[in-house]
Amino acid sequence: MEEPGRQNALGELLEEFSRAQFRAKDAGGKVERIERRCLEFFGKDYSYSIIQNPNGELSSHYPRQIVFLEYESTEEDKHMFESTVQVGKLQDLVNRSKMARCRGRFVCPVILYKGKHICRSATLAGWGELYGRTGYNYIFSGGSDDACADTEVTDDDAAARNWDSQFDKVRGHDIKLLKYLSVRYICDLMVENKKVKFGVNVTSSEKVDKAQRYADFTLLSIPYPGCEFFKDYKDRDYAAEGLVFNWKQDHVDAPLNIPPCLMRNLNIDWREYQSWDLVKQTQNYLRLLLHIINGDDSSGLLVHCISGWDRTPLFVSLLRLSLWADGMVHGSLEPAEILYLTIAYDWFLFGHMLVDRLSKGEEIFFFCFNFLKHITSDEFSSSGRKSRRKSSQPRDPGLLLEDFCALKPRDRGSNTSLSSDFSVITEDSPSAFGNHNYEAVDLMTFGAQSHAVWKKTHTSSPHAALWNRTAEEHLFYPPGAEAKSSSSSSSNHSDVLLRAGSSPLEVPQRRLSAQSERASRLEAVKSIFLSAYNTAIGLKTVSPSPSGAISGLLEQFARGVGLRGPSTIV
Image (cartoon, rainbow, N blue to C red; front, side, top):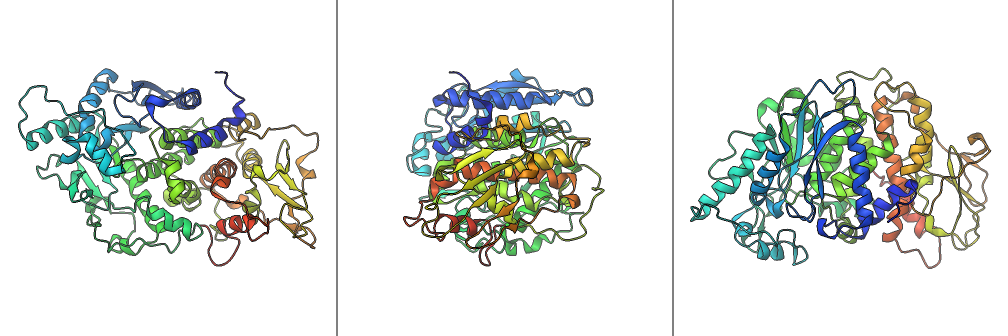
């Protein structure tokens, strides 16, 4: 199949992602293109090998080509760290250990940071899964998932006669894999000690392993709400501030448990964790993970929840983006490229069920990228130095007016023109907003604005590659939108919002001169995401108002981004 214009890449990815959950055995031409781009982006900064999973033999919802990053391959860094892992042996350990974890989602290295592996997985499988994988999947997911239905427990030496010996064997292989990857820290995001369905313990976790097989590891219990909680986030008009999880529920029995040595120097009162809102909890957990990987020069980290496809990619993605913003990983990638990579690899190819989550309003995926504005400060920095530029005024974490203006769906039948520097979308149809007499609405999209900002403020960056227009066009513009050249300069486009019966209003500008390098990079990623997400996915969950009134479609966007009422998108 011929590869389409690359300006459609991000839009194609999001549309494929929102169409169906990825299954290795069902992958087609679009998935192949997504996989090739991921390999291209990994290859810009790393030497890597591939763990083969062509038809989901290892795990049905893991990538068909699992990337094992061996070492950084830039001229400056390629001799600093060298892989000591033999990929053939790693593949053998994976084959032996996959039974140890829920849905066969084994420990998988996904980020390489200063020679250390940051890994992801599901939690440990319980006896119910080990001895009835097909029945387990039916119970656990209502019969909708056969991720491990084709996997069975084998007894190669015919010596395992009881459950304990079977656990010894499969968990022993899991431990060997962890040690081979030099993982020392295991961070468990489950709010339960064990996942129980219909009275059956269908999963377990390292922290409650009766035989203490994982005693050689540093175990952290950092309970974090599951995807169901993010329906509350959406129902509150995407307001995460003030949204506190109910820790009194019967199934919530996993307390916060962090070794005291890892609590030092963070200035966090961990005793108050049950009173934290979603913003504070996510910030503090991310700070903890960054503190761990920056505090140990040789040991890796494993992050997991239950199935490893909701909370796990949230924190893996935040870690990848945070380290990238500091110039510590993926140093050659531009904002649009790192965004593509983390959506495609961390979320889509590892099986996040976006279509199911959207249908239920459990928008943990959207939360991840909108949350980037809350981790722009230097307290999340891993670069070891403070920004030279500091803001003299506190930044408003909410979306500004031009952010709202950027949320322009492509499906309203508007006339669209994308200039060389800015994307300006004009709506001049008198019926566009029902009977309201809207003269015009000039909407400037996020991605192109980020492009201009990146060029203006980062040409001398020591870490980042120059944000160039060609790369942006390759990845930002979704299907149906074309990057067109214009002879007019960007100065010909007015940054205004025209309202009914009013004169043009100046659009508030971001205080970019006061932003740090880190903040600007993360803002660029967030901006591109919001625009692409709105175009490819946003309208699919919104039914246009029959009257077309402003209280319909536009009102929902206004409330969603925090321009109306006390609820602001945070």
